[in-house]
Image (cartoon, rainbow, N blue to C red; front, side, top):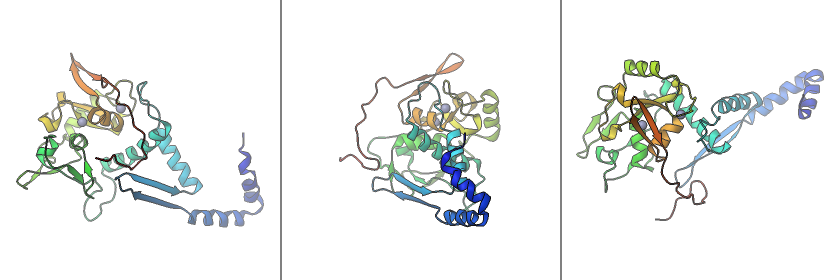
Length: 260
Ligand SMILES: [Zn+2]
Ligand SMILES: [Zn+2]
């Protein structure tokens, strides 16, 4: 059934085609997107899109907003936020985005071997803008091969890129041959939207060889590193174990940090 809201537009397309086209271009000029960083390091997105651009974004977000298994209790808004981040990460992983200043778009992280291992008392790892991130997060980024360079305690830069630990194209092909989707239970995220997880964490010495690798989607990779889930070997397969207790959520506004 036709949406009644659009009847007047339809009449204009029929009888005032030029006027409708002019209006369409005027509306298009109103497009805008603000991406601002809050004092707590969160980002706020505020945007206006034209009908076609908005429909494209909505279709893409909806394709990634389905619950990933019965244990997925994210809200609809959280699904949409994750979908947008997943699209951005996928586009960067594909390596097809244009270079800027000679480099592919990437997340910049300053860390040391010691803070990567989560050693107590070590300086926090930081995003390129100086925002501290937890060692669990930096371990996830290292696991999925996002990090290529790490500073050692004596300030020597160590390349941890393709030569030493990144999953090689042949390993990735072999992993893809074993899995069609993310390896988490009930998750139907296609293999091309996953990244490699080291069952024994790379930061703790886990090797980048096939028996130690599992493809995980953005949501499940985050659950395993930051959400308290564990992946353990069980016979020929692996088992996903949820956290024992649910940490009660305290209500606060996004972007606001707890006082120390
Ligand atoms: Zn991982
Ligand atoms: Zn998944």
